[in-house]
Structures are given as structure tokens and as C-alpha cells.
Image (cartoon, rainbow, N blue to C red):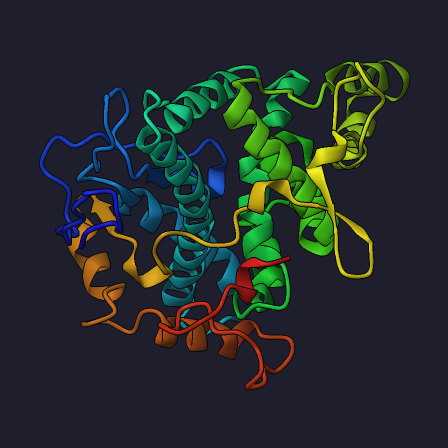
Length: 350
């Protein structure tokens, strides 16, 4: 497949990485067996597809993590707990990483537009990843909370109305989705307000864009307020206010002040101002089932068979099996199907 106008060729990849391939994982315990690899290679002078781009899974770590969840499920009387726990852990990590693909897609397209206009190809995505890695090294400091892409990704999985949103209580019960505002799990625990409030989701998306474009982790200048909140009310109180502070900072500020600008807002037909957030991250270049999944480790072949749309029950058999255990309300025919070939962007819009 050629990306329109870019000359980039995308080939279908095998599901098993080459021997000796790097194994990664996110910092949060529920996602330590998942990581997303960006679409474009870093450090190149022109757009070049990374042949290993996509969602990567440490299959052995996933099986081990799911076994712990299965023990808790068995105490709850869940039938077929080993199977159900593996499905629940996988579908959460998969859709969390799919949001990273949505961010990667929009930033990569911006990079390619700049290159097409004659500017040097910026390494926006790789540079942002490097800054976030440094944030994860200072987990006892409030700067860690600015790795906000993780908060958005968890909110993307948890929010309603989506088919996966109906599993939110199960994700919470078994520790896959952090309890809201659990400071020990940092930015991954800032998801609830974003999942429930479209304006908050848009404001944090705006900040994430600015982080990429400016190269700053705090482009809205809210760190001094957070540090003041820590002094006055403690670290938990400050953590609870992070999303509110981002919301407030995105509003137009006086000249010379950090934060939002009047040109960040546009008015709709009713003259109601709306933060455009550079278009947000409402879609990826590819739909869910078109993003490559790479399984690392000895359990990889088994998971390939299990989560292959052509050979296994993924995704619909997986979803229905989970809903038969955990769905708290019926999904009617008007609810969006995030896996269909003709779905719109509704499931990605807060």
C-alpha cells in the first residue's frame, strides 16, 4: 500500500518478530507487556517506514499477568477464568496502544507535510518519546504527570459510549485500569475526568500536540501552580487538580502569560467558542484490525492463533465472551462497533 502522495510503501508484516528483537513495555503494570512502535523511522532525512511499526506484545509476560487476574476471577466465581482473563488483559492493552497509533498517525502526517513543503523532516515523535522516558525516571516528582498521552490512551479505552467502554468495571475490578487518581500509577490514573468530559479530553489533546510541537513537557506553564498546590495541600491534592489546571490553562490568557491563545479557539454556528486542539487525535491512518501486532516470546505462536482475525475468534468472539461475563447493560444496534471495516470516528470522539 502506498500512502497518498508520500511514496511510502507499507507492506504486510509477519506476526512474529525476528530473533533478537528488542522487547519493551510500558511503565504501568497492566501495560508492561505492551508497547507501540512508531510508523516512521527516527533520525532520517526523509520519511521512511519502520518495518517493525505497530503494536508489540511480550506474550510470556501477558500470559503471566493474565494468570494472576485469573486467580482473582476464580475467587469471584468467573467460569473459564484463564481464558477470560487473557482476553480481558489483551483487549485492554491492544486498544490502549491503538490510541498511541492515533497520536502517531497525526504527528507523522504533520512531519510529512513539513517535509513535503521543503522543510527538514522533524523528529517530533521520537523526541517526544525520549522526553517521556525521562519523565518516567522521576516518578516521585510532579513532572511525571505530564506524560499525558498515557492518560488519554486509558480514557480512550474506558469512555462511553463504546463497545469496550462496557468493560470498564471489569478493567477496574481486576487492576487493569487504575483506580481514578491513584497517584502510584501516575499519568495512567488521570483517565476518569478525560473519559467523562469531552472538553477535558480536548484540552489534554491540545497540550499533547503542544508538547510535540514545542519540545516542552509543560507548554502551558502549569508546573508552578502544581508545585504551589503540593506545598499547600500535599501531593495527592495536587494530583487531583492536574486535569482542571490543564483545562484552565488552555483558555485564552492575557498577553505575555503562558497558556492558551485566542487563535486556539474557534466558534461554531451558534457562536460558541471551541478549542480546536489541532484537530485532536480522533483517528489513525489505519483501523484497528489493520495495525500490525507483533508477539514476542515462547507463547507468541499460541497468541497469534488466538488473536488472528482470519484464524481465531478475535475480535468478535473475544468481545462477546467478555460481555457474557461482565457487561452490565445491553449494547443496542445503534452503538458503534470499533472493529468494523466501515466504522466512523464516533468511538474515538469523547
